[in-house]
Amino acid sequence: MPGESPVFRVRHRHRADVSGAASGLSPTGPRDGRSHRARPATALVLLLLISSILAACGASSQARSRASADSSVNSGPVDLRLGYFGNLTHAPALVGVGKGYFKDALASNVHLTTQTFNAGPAEVEAIFGGAIDAGFIGPSPAINAYIKSKGAAVRIVSGAASGGASLVVRPAAGINGPSDLKGKTLATPQLGNTQDVALRAYLLDHGIHTDAQGGGDAKIVPTDNATTLQLFQQGKVDAAWVPEPWVSRLHLEAGGKILVDERSLWPDGQFTTTELIVARSFLDQHPDTVKALITGEIKAIDWITQNPVEAKAAVNDALLQLTGKALKPAVIDEAWTRLSFSADPLASTLKKEAADARRAGLVANTNLGSILDLRLLNQVLAAGGKPKVGTAGLGSG
Image 1 (cartoon, one colour):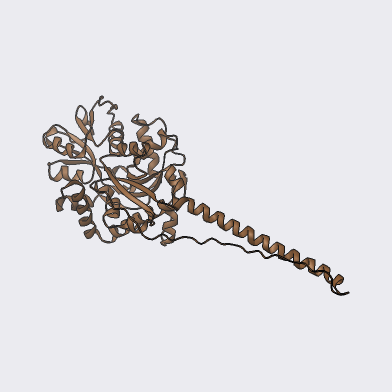
Image 2 (cartoon, rainbow, N blue to C red):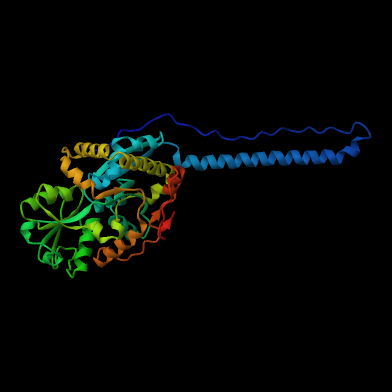
């Protein structure tokens, strides 16, 4: 299966139990007249010895309890099923799998398999259905999963990417500004995905109303990215809000014009595009495995940042393996200029993402409560001498 990782097995390391030892005492009777004077001292010695034995036994019991608690999480085989997209916005996942950073970080008893998706809502359904345990995903589907499950299903444990999304229009459609989008046919990867929410919010900001059924002042059609490219070339789609590399492909291969680079809509051009989410049940049962996954991701991000030329080649090779077709150098070079990679989930931007989704009628509320659990991420960052990241009041850090 494309994108599937091998089973990783190495020798187990077992934690030794601490065991206490007790020795029996055989009191003897008095031997001479001094024995009566020695009894208080003897009793004290016996008391101290018994106390020492009991303390040793208690310490041993506590040690065994701690060992048991630790091993209950990590003993035996652990299946980690990871989802991600074949997009440049998921470069940390592509590199983490392709260069073995996840493999190297995960423990010997972890069996990693991977699955790729076109858009976030389908990946959320996979998590809800128990088909995957963790996934790289856009913020809007992650928010929807959290709200839909009333906080029970998922947690965001790390960021991954920022930027890399735009509205591309077909020049022949006569779209030169937002008002020209009225009456047009627009594509997004999937209803409720991050780019879908961004488009609907942008339209609302300019007085253009849409609905989830494709009606309203403009028609939004959820479409697979590869199909969007074909429809764009055929003149059947007037514009599309998509992630990279599809922005650059629509621009360079289909003659599209970038009307809105989404970075222009956010302070400092920073907005979260990709997050790492984990099923809450898996996080509770296997925190060490999740921590190792985050460790592998940070190593992948560091390598991407430090080796941009090699990183583009590695990502392109991963896309070739997943899709059977590599990107043209000009496409990946252009796309790379709109992207940045970081484990910071840019927590403050999640609030606007949620507000936009609610305005578009895609979520019932904006209560994100404890959607973030960045404790493991911050442990990994601190261990590597990196600054911790904040939660903006949206969970634990």
